[in-house]
Length: 263
Image (cartoon, rainbow, N blue to C red; front, side, top):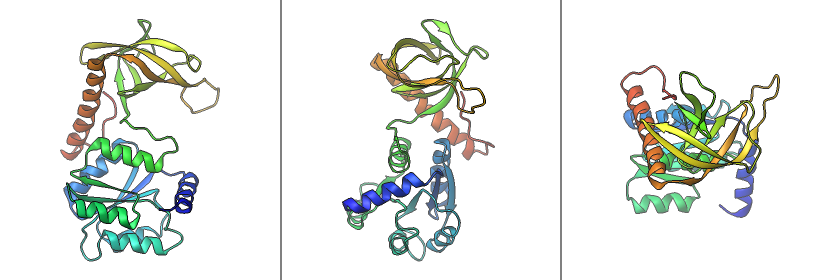
Protein backbone atom coordinates (compact mmCIF):
# COMPACT_ATOMS: atom_id res chain seq x y z
CA UNK A 1 0.00 0.00 0.00
CA UNK A 2 1.25 3.49 -0.78
CA UNK A 3 1.08 6.42 1.64
CA UNK A 4 -2.32 7.64 0.44
CA UNK A 5 -3.81 4.14 0.69
CA UNK A 6 -2.47 3.75 4.22
CA UNK A 7 -3.97 7.10 5.22
CA UNK A 8 -7.31 6.19 3.66
CA UNK A 9 -7.32 2.81 5.38
CA UNK A 10 -6.54 4.39 8.74
CA UNK A 11 -9.35 6.92 8.22
CA UNK A 12 -11.74 4.08 7.33
CA UNK A 13 -10.92 2.22 10.51
CA UNK A 14 -11.30 5.31 12.70
CA UNK A 15 -14.80 5.83 11.32
CA UNK A 16 -15.82 2.24 12.02
CA UNK A 17 -16.96 1.73 15.58
CA UNK A 18 -17.83 -1.94 15.36
CA UNK A 19 -15.54 -4.79 16.33
CA UNK A 20 -16.87 -7.24 13.77
CA UNK A 21 -14.69 -9.63 11.77
CA UNK A 22 -15.70 -11.71 8.77
CA UNK A 23 -14.03 -15.11 8.62
CA UNK A 24 -14.01 -16.88 5.23
CA UNK A 25 -13.11 -20.58 4.94
CA UNK A 26 -14.66 -24.01 4.40
CA UNK A 27 -12.63 -26.12 6.84
CA UNK A 28 -15.12 -26.33 9.67
CA UNK A 29 -12.85 -27.22 12.59
CA UNK A 30 -10.18 -24.71 11.58
CA UNK A 31 -12.71 -21.89 11.20
CA UNK A 32 -14.39 -22.80 14.49
CA UNK A 33 -11.13 -22.57 16.45
CA UNK A 34 -10.24 -19.19 14.92
CA UNK A 35 -13.78 -17.93 15.51
CA UNK A 36 -13.68 -18.99 19.15
CA UNK A 37 -10.31 -17.31 19.65
CA UNK A 38 -11.60 -14.06 18.18
CA UNK A 39 -14.67 -14.21 20.40
CA UNK A 40 -12.38 -14.84 23.37
CA UNK A 41 -10.63 -11.59 22.43
CA UNK A 42 -14.01 -9.78 22.52
CA UNK A 43 -14.63 -9.48 18.79
CA UNK A 44 -17.88 -10.22 16.95
CA UNK A 45 -17.37 -12.91 14.32
CA UNK A 46 -19.34 -14.00 11.26
CA UNK A 47 -18.23 -17.05 9.31
CA UNK A 48 -18.95 -17.88 5.66
CA UNK A 49 -17.65 -20.68 3.43
CA UNK A 50 -17.26 -19.16 -0.05
CA UNK A 51 -16.45 -15.94 -1.89
CA UNK A 52 -20.08 -15.66 -3.01
CA UNK A 53 -21.27 -15.84 0.59
CA UNK A 54 -18.68 -13.25 1.63
CA UNK A 55 -19.87 -10.83 -1.06
CA UNK A 56 -23.46 -11.40 0.05
CA UNK A 57 -22.40 -10.55 3.60
CA UNK A 58 -21.07 -7.22 2.30
CA UNK A 59 -24.68 -6.07 1.78
CA UNK A 60 -25.04 -5.82 5.55
CA UNK A 61 -23.01 -3.41 7.73
CA UNK A 62 -19.40 -3.87 6.71
CA UNK A 63 -16.96 -5.75 8.93
CA UNK A 64 -13.88 -4.00 10.26
CA UNK A 65 -11.64 -6.83 9.07
CA UNK A 66 -11.78 -9.86 6.79
CA UNK A 67 -9.72 -12.98 7.48
CA UNK A 68 -9.88 -15.40 4.57
CA UNK A 69 -8.35 -18.71 3.64
CA UNK A 70 -6.19 -18.49 0.54
CA UNK A 71 -7.69 -21.71 -0.85
CA UNK A 72 -11.49 -21.77 -1.16
CA UNK A 73 -13.97 -23.77 -3.26
CA UNK A 74 -14.61 -22.04 -6.58
CA UNK A 75 -13.14 -18.56 -6.42
CA UNK A 76 -10.18 -18.29 -4.04
CA UNK A 77 -9.10 -15.74 -1.46
CA UNK A 78 -7.19 -13.68 -4.03
CA UNK A 79 -10.35 -13.45 -6.15
CA UNK A 80 -12.24 -12.17 -3.12
CA UNK A 81 -9.52 -9.61 -2.42
CA UNK A 82 -9.63 -8.35 -6.02
CA UNK A 83 -13.42 -8.05 -6.01
CA UNK A 84 -13.39 -6.10 -2.75
CA UNK A 85 -10.80 -3.66 -4.09
CA UNK A 86 -12.93 -2.96 -7.16
CA UNK A 87 -15.74 -1.52 -5.06
CA UNK A 88 -15.26 1.82 -3.34
CA UNK A 89 -17.49 0.74 -0.45
CA UNK A 90 -15.33 -2.27 0.40
CA UNK A 91 -11.91 -1.26 -0.93
CA UNK A 92 -10.57 -0.06 2.42
CA UNK A 93 -11.50 -3.15 4.46
CA UNK A 94 -8.23 -4.79 5.55
CA UNK A 95 -7.84 -8.38 4.39
CA UNK A 96 -5.65 -10.97 6.14
CA UNK A 97 -4.94 -14.31 4.46
CA UNK A 98 -4.64 -17.72 6.09
CA UNK A 99 -1.76 -19.59 4.46
CA UNK A 100 0.07 -22.92 4.94
CA UNK A 101 2.95 -22.93 7.41
CA UNK A 102 6.34 -21.97 5.92
CA UNK A 103 4.83 -21.32 2.48
CA UNK A 104 7.18 -18.65 1.15
CA UNK A 105 5.38 -18.40 -2.20
CA UNK A 106 2.05 -17.66 -0.54
CA UNK A 107 3.69 -15.13 1.79
CA UNK A 108 5.14 -13.26 -1.20
CA UNK A 109 1.84 -13.39 -3.05
CA UNK A 110 -0.03 -11.83 -0.13
CA UNK A 111 2.54 -9.07 0.26
CA UNK A 112 2.75 -8.40 -3.50
CA UNK A 113 -0.99 -7.75 -3.87
CA UNK A 114 -1.01 -5.39 -0.87
CA UNK A 115 -2.87 -7.51 1.68
CA UNK A 116 -3.00 -6.21 5.25
CA UNK A 117 -1.17 -9.35 6.39
CA UNK A 118 -1.16 -13.12 6.60
CA UNK A 119 -1.36 -15.77 9.30
CA UNK A 120 0.28 -19.16 9.05
CA UNK A 121 -1.80 -22.21 9.90
CA UNK A 122 -2.38 -23.55 12.45
CA UNK A 123 -3.03 -20.03 13.74
CA UNK A 124 -1.34 -19.21 17.04
CA UNK A 125 -3.43 -17.18 19.53
CA UNK A 126 -0.74 -14.56 20.20
CA UNK A 127 -0.09 -13.96 16.50
CA UNK A 128 -3.81 -13.71 15.79
CA UNK A 129 -4.32 -11.30 18.67
CA UNK A 130 -1.48 -9.00 17.62
CA UNK A 131 -2.54 -8.96 13.98
CA UNK A 132 -6.15 -8.11 14.74
CA UNK A 133 -5.21 -5.51 17.34
CA UNK A 134 -2.86 -3.77 14.90
CA UNK A 135 -5.54 -3.55 12.22
CA UNK A 136 -8.63 -2.71 14.24
CA UNK A 137 -7.68 -0.91 17.45
CA UNK A 138 -6.65 2.74 17.69
CA UNK A 139 -4.29 1.78 20.52
CA UNK A 140 -3.24 -1.79 19.68
CA UNK A 141 -1.88 -4.10 22.35
CA UNK A 142 0.94 -6.56 21.77
CA UNK A 143 -0.02 -9.09 24.41
CA UNK A 144 -3.21 -11.03 25.00
CA UNK A 145 -5.31 -9.46 27.73
CA UNK A 146 -7.93 -11.58 29.47
CA UNK A 147 -10.55 -11.13 32.14
CA UNK A 148 -9.73 -13.07 35.29
CA UNK A 149 -11.07 -13.31 38.82
CA UNK A 150 -8.08 -13.70 41.13
CA UNK A 151 -6.98 -12.33 44.52
CA UNK A 152 -5.26 -8.94 44.17
CA UNK A 153 -3.81 -6.65 46.84
CA UNK A 154 -2.32 -3.18 46.79
CA UNK A 155 0.42 -2.76 49.39
CA UNK A 156 -0.76 -6.06 50.92
CA UNK A 157 -4.33 -4.78 51.35
CA UNK A 158 -6.96 -6.81 49.42
CA UNK A 159 -9.09 -4.69 47.12
CA UNK A 160 -12.60 -5.06 45.70
CA UNK A 161 -12.97 -8.29 47.61
CA UNK A 162 -15.56 -10.70 46.21
CA UNK A 163 -15.10 -14.15 47.69
CA UNK A 164 -11.43 -13.25 48.17
CA UNK A 165 -11.03 -12.43 44.47
CA UNK A 166 -10.98 -9.36 42.25
CA UNK A 167 -12.14 -9.09 38.65
CA UNK A 168 -9.28 -7.68 36.57
CA UNK A 169 -8.02 -7.49 33.00
CA UNK A 170 -4.59 -9.12 32.93
CA UNK A 171 -1.69 -9.32 30.47
CA UNK A 172 1.89 -10.38 31.02
CA UNK A 173 3.00 -6.75 31.06
CA UNK A 174 0.23 -5.10 33.03
CA UNK A 175 -3.37 -5.05 34.16
CA UNK A 176 -6.52 -2.99 34.57
CA UNK A 177 -7.42 -2.82 38.22
CA UNK A 178 -10.96 -1.73 39.17
CA UNK A 179 -11.00 0.69 42.10
CA UNK A 180 -13.51 3.25 43.30
CA UNK A 181 -10.71 5.72 43.95
CA UNK A 182 -7.89 4.96 41.47
CA UNK A 183 -4.44 6.47 41.85
CA UNK A 184 -3.33 9.31 39.53
CA UNK A 185 -1.29 8.82 36.36
CA UNK A 186 2.43 7.95 36.80
CA UNK A 187 1.94 6.89 40.42
CA UNK A 188 3.90 3.74 41.26
CA UNK A 189 2.26 1.16 43.50
CA UNK A 190 3.08 -2.28 44.86
CA UNK A 191 0.67 -4.99 43.76
CA UNK A 192 0.33 -8.61 44.77
CA UNK A 193 -1.45 -11.14 42.53
CA UNK A 194 -2.22 -14.74 43.44
CA UNK A 195 -2.08 -17.24 40.58
CA UNK A 196 -2.17 -21.00 41.13
CA UNK A 197 -1.46 -20.59 44.85
CA UNK A 198 1.60 -18.47 44.12
CA UNK A 199 1.90 -14.80 45.01
CA UNK A 200 3.37 -12.49 42.40
CA UNK A 201 4.72 -9.18 43.66
CA UNK A 202 5.32 -6.36 41.20
CA UNK A 203 5.64 -2.61 41.00
CA UNK A 204 3.16 -1.05 38.62
CA UNK A 205 3.11 2.43 37.11
CA UNK A 206 -0.32 3.98 36.49
CA UNK A 207 -0.68 4.60 32.75
CA UNK A 208 -4.21 5.99 32.96
CA UNK A 209 -7.12 6.11 35.36
CA UNK A 210 -10.90 6.24 35.11
CA UNK A 211 -12.48 8.12 38.01
CA UNK A 212 -15.90 7.15 39.27
CA UNK A 213 -18.56 9.30 37.56
CA UNK A 214 -22.16 9.17 38.73
CA UNK A 215 -24.46 7.92 35.98
CA UNK A 216 -21.58 6.70 33.80
CA UNK A 217 -21.31 3.06 32.70
CA UNK A 218 -17.53 3.30 32.49
CA UNK A 219 -15.78 1.24 35.14
CA UNK A 220 -13.63 3.20 37.55
CA UNK A 221 -10.10 1.94 37.93
CA UNK A 222 -6.59 2.26 36.55
CA UNK A 223 -4.38 0.72 33.93
CA UNK A 224 -1.00 -0.44 35.23
CA UNK A 225 2.22 -1.31 33.49
CA UNK A 226 4.55 -3.64 35.37
CA UNK A 227 7.84 -1.78 35.74
CA UNK A 228 9.39 -4.23 38.18
CA UNK A 229 8.55 -7.92 38.06
CA UNK A 230 10.65 -11.07 38.28
CA UNK A 231 11.07 -12.92 34.96
CA UNK A 232 9.73 -16.13 36.49
CA UNK A 233 6.62 -14.31 37.69
CA UNK A 234 6.05 -12.81 34.25
CA UNK A 235 6.39 -16.29 32.77
CA UNK A 236 3.83 -17.56 35.30
CA UNK A 237 1.37 -14.92 34.09
CA UNK A 238 2.12 -15.79 30.47
CA UNK A 239 1.46 -19.48 31.05
CA UNK A 240 -1.70 -18.70 33.04
CA UNK A 241 -3.09 -16.62 30.16
CA UNK A 242 -2.11 -19.19 27.54
CA UNK A 243 -3.69 -22.02 29.54
CA UNK A 244 -6.84 -20.03 30.24
CA UNK A 245 -7.37 -19.28 26.54
CA UNK A 246 -6.67 -22.90 25.59
CA UNK A 247 -9.06 -24.20 28.26
CA UNK A 248 -11.83 -21.87 27.10
CA UNK A 249 -11.42 -23.03 23.50
CA UNK A 250 -11.39 -26.72 24.48
CA UNK A 251 -14.50 -26.22 26.61
CA UNK A 252 -16.32 -24.49 23.77
CA UNK A 253 -15.28 -27.18 21.27
CA UNK A 254 -16.56 -29.83 23.65
CA UNK A 255 -19.96 -28.21 23.71
CA UNK A 256 -19.64 -25.57 26.41
CA UNK A 257 -22.40 -22.98 26.12
CA UNK A 258 -20.35 -19.81 26.49
CA UNK A 259 -16.64 -19.05 26.44
CA UNK A 260 -15.51 -18.54 30.03
CA UNK A 261 -13.75 -15.27 30.67
CA UNK A 262 -13.32 -15.56 34.38
CA UNK A 263 -11.06 -17.78 36.41
